[in-house]
Length: 498
Image (cartoon, rainbow, N blue to C red; front, side):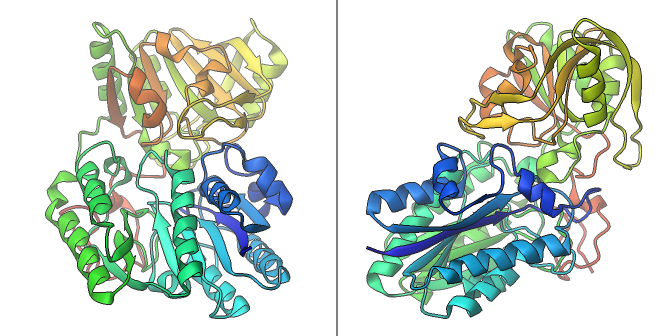
């Protein structure tokens, strides 16, 4: 029986975002899963769509002895606070070392973590882990496709496997593929050859959706080339808001020979470079977007969904900018809903006022982002909730969600979902738990960039992207970079960082 340690430490870091990630943010957790340790990892992951779920399913089917260390994650934000990083990394490694003899290690990481004191969060973690366990124990890692992959990460892990979908509906599947790759290494005793290839331009996240071109064709090619001598192939469009020299798209390949893995890595990188012009799309101002949505809704039988992409909490936003709400009210939109706005004080005030009350509330506008300000109005409190419900869509999977005290507020034809925990609007249940039926709305404004598509595209007559003020610009060109590698273009066909 093979003894394999399991762990995870996930954070996507927007170094330009307004709020950092502290230890308590990891204790509270990401979406449906808080900080878990030991056997609780195995009992709590259930059907949650994360990498370690699939890896554990594979391990149980293969009859491995599972040695669970810890798993934690926090909602994307600015840097991971230094003491939080050190505390979690130290505990993770100490727990793994304490298991004694191991045949392998599986880690569920993101790939774009930046701490206050360490730019390459995962590279440093893997380096310390390798020093602690020695060169003999194979280390396999599943990664988000937004990972910024560095040479240090590649050097200290034996195989790293990236998601192939955005929205990330294949997180658990990727964990399973990673566990299979680890099993191959443990059985053969042979470490695969590796290749890392960089790409010359940053890719805005709104145009990284894998159901759209050009990523749809790129990932089809990735899957087709993962055969024969090539045992694993991953393309990472990267997270283009992490200010360090490892930021940027990459390809990593593993296989039986250096020539094979170098060849396929270069082939995918060349394909991405040749499609540079295709990483583009229409972006509306808030007023333009709402007016366009209203025009479409006049004859549509399904809702028009608007992505409030620049305040996406899945990319470091605080989900509290008011640009899209102002546009909905100014345009007198009807049968419209917006969510999920993170404002614990407003949610608590609505909860205290009770359903049916009319209250004057000031919502959001605390991000410090230029062009944003709080929004004050008299709202009807339509429904309040303790914030506990079950998600149903393919991104979060069937899992228990807790957004804290929450409410549906109504202002004219606009309904506003406010909550007390910051969570990306990527599941229809995040409207239904406060009494809004999303399929009955004409316009839905989601604080998300792409993940919402997994559950909302099937019910949408159209999807529009709006750029209201927020900390995650549609284009990386406008970010105040200071540490990128020289020669990297700041966007497709954009200026070169010097």
